[in-house]
Amino acid sequence: MRVIPVIDILNGVTVHAARGKRKEYQPIESILCDSAEPLRVASAFEALGFAELYIADLDNIMGKGSSFPIVKQIAEKTKLKIMVDAGIYDVEKAREAFRSKALKIVVGTETLQNLGFVREAADLFGNEHVVVSLDLLNGKIMSKSEIIESIGALALARRFQEMGVTEIVVLDLARVGSGEGADVPLLKDILNSVSIRVLVGGGVRNLKELKMLEGVGVCGTLLATALHSGRISVEDLRSANMI
Image 1 (cartoon, rainbow, N blue to C red):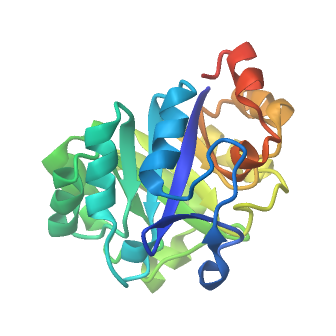
Image 2: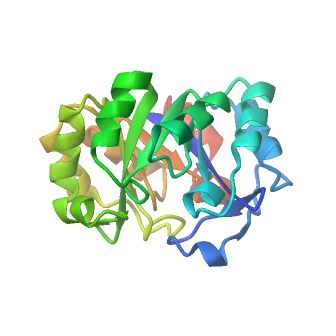
């Protein structure tokens, strides 16, 4: 099981994401770092032994700016392997993300306008560098495209696998920051439908749940709130060989 810390950046600071209500997001308060400045948060994760970092560029996702300069700064100042979700839906924005020195781009269904872009990106940049996020709200696919929104999570997961995608994220925004747990039934259905790597984000509560997710076949978990609050400790992760 890979445990990947998440930094949600909004207006240049790391914020506490909760249930997708982005207008209400506030700067994080963390037991791991005394600052909400993204580089300092990222450096704290690196110092604790994490090797990967998931950055959600909420300014880009919301169409109100870009945090790519911050992504590049983190990439240059740390050794973290960065995957960035920045509302990427076309080749130019993908290139911009890679110019910021991200190792992987995350193509989220929330901002995806055309399914064909996923195959194009996998072919152009290499499927190992393109991750697709099934963005959900209470179990239902989110997308600007009515066609994509109507397909459903299981069918989309299979479609993305057919396009050459090797890694997907199952992310329910309604669960993010909630501590209510992952949607295990849906995860099991997806894991039974595809053979590619599946990461999960949103609501994971504790080490017991992490071990359960590992047991059903999830290969990685995105964590933020549980780490900053101490509900899941670095010591627990080390003892479970998850860090």
